[in-house]
Image (tube, rainbow, N blue to C red; front, side, top):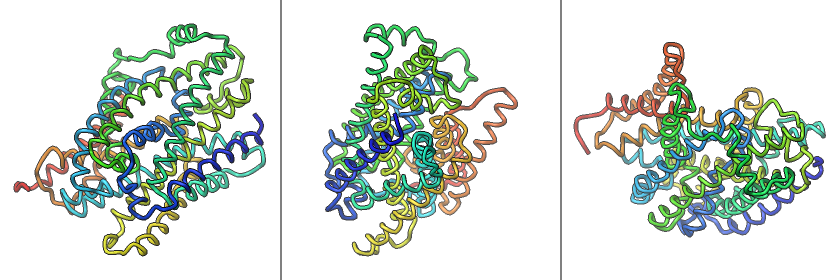
Amino acid sequence: MTPVAVILTVLGYIAVLFVVAWLSGRRADNAGFFTGNRRTPWYMAAFAMIGAAMSGVTFISVPGSVAADSFSYMQMVAGFTVGQLIVAYVLIPTFYRLRVVSLYEYLDDRFGVSSHRTGAWFFFISKMLGAALRVYVVCAVLQLLVFAHYGIPFWANAVITMAFVWLYTCRGGVKSLIWTDTLKTLCLVGSLVLSILFIMQALGLSAGETAREVAASPMSRVFFFDDPSSDRYFWKMFAAGIVLLVAMTGLDQDMMQRNLSCATPRDSQKNIVLTAVSQIFVIFLFLVLGVLLYLYADRTGLSLPAKSDQVFSLVAVDGGLPLAVGILFVVGLISSTYSAAGSALTALTTSFTVDILEGTKRRDEAQLTRLRKGVHVGMALGMAAVILAFEYWADDSVINLVYKVASYTYGPILGMFAFGLATRRRVRDRWIPVVAVAAPVLSALLQHWALTAWDYQIGFELLIYNAAFTIAGMLLLSQSDEK
């Protein structure tokens, strides 16, 4: 697949994306930008959430990870399913009862202004880093396929990407995201299924033969019960999946803004349960695709790249497969990236405007619109800067790096919400920022000590320890009188 073909495919998708975004967001006001006016049908939100839960990281990194991690990711997916039920039946009723625009308004209602601001700032850091990581991996692939060919530097790649993301989200916000996420779901799932079919055809495998080949591969091992010290141990990944889903979806303004756009909590719950079931099948197909990619590379003598995240792009674009496979790869990659970056940009704008800036509720519609647009530009520039920083720092499988970042930054948010929902105790609100900063530091020290003293690897379950340190700190700050 030539660089020109890649460019034409990208521009074609962006043109469709802009038309969808313009049609859906042309009459959006501030309520439409922040909450979609709470008029989204639940089935549309559910279909959009299938794609929203999958980023370019999922599209690239999950298939490539099977060589090192086999199908162990499904252990975490099992935890994700339990976590979705907690979000649906614990968090959704709370957020609808309070009629929040930003999730972190709950912390203000429960504890006070310092807790509210602390939760918002940790979300800001978490989402900025996580979203930038997701966009970075796609920029890296496009740099390899297109920009390097024309001598265009990586910084220009990042700036161009974020400029397009800003343009298609600047008007509609959440109201546009529901429709663009629907487009993303169609493109991503379609690209996934058709890529599998084309590779099966290239290998000369029927559906039954493919199932046998995948089952016989050592890369298809799902369960790991043998070594509790391993970061792939079942119970560690299962528990981590539960808390990661609650933290990264249920307490994440980016993901929850779609669920909260439904008219009623019942509709939102139906959306979440359907998304949970769909997610199991889609991620399993990504892992199957990973086995087929390595099988194809082995049988055709392709040299594997140094980074597993580049395996899919190598096989799809330069592996001798039909041009359609390369086009499907680019469409799936671009659709997942632009949607994920757009939703993150909208969520960051919403949270920063509502939670962090003072006096927002006292502004009229025109003032709030000007403020929101200014913040939106600032968030786009900030994300581009972080993407450039990752170009010189990221050296891990990006799917692993995303969850490592989340384990540190979402821990205080998870701890604060858990304490608020599980107890009725008040806390000394002004000291909450100290607790929130101390918890990740103590978690990092615990991780280092466990590895040094016991040769025990704390993996994704680090988020649990991080939240526990936060809860312990809040207990120390708690007051005897109950609300």
